[in-house]
Length: 186
Image 1 (cartoon, helix red, strand yellow):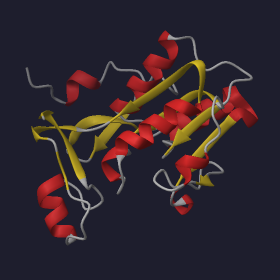
Image 2: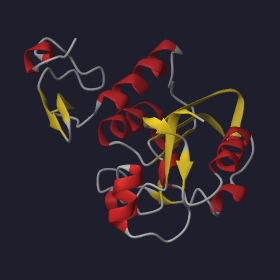
Image 3: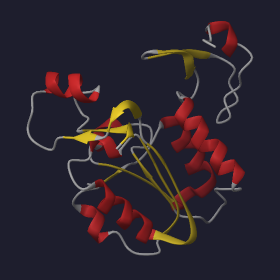
């Protein structure tokens, strides 16, 4: 059943508590007007709540940090919150450290983090994403939590690490910055 804007009027953001939602890209009114969280970010928060995380004193790695979630995680973990991204100029809301998930991942210390989070990052990485996941898992403490999401398309899995024009990337992968699709079929 297709939802319309009135279906969201009784919704409440589980990150900041706002009840006001605005249009986000191709979606209906699903982005929180206050903290900017989208559905995938609020689902991440639902999983954190399910596992009673985070807690003060925990160490959290958050790659490509989303504003509302970053503020929440930093408020709980304080200095234990570590936001990372390759392009730190995109993040004026939190002190982000430069980190390349293709090159710097090998230097990430083992058993370092209680929680690792990244949403819609793997489709951008111009390297072996499975190796990135292996090294992120290595960086988790025993019983740590690794939460991530990727966009899943109706197409088969495909990737292209070559230098193709951005209009071709948009056509094949849905966005100029994507180099792969995670499809419903392999």
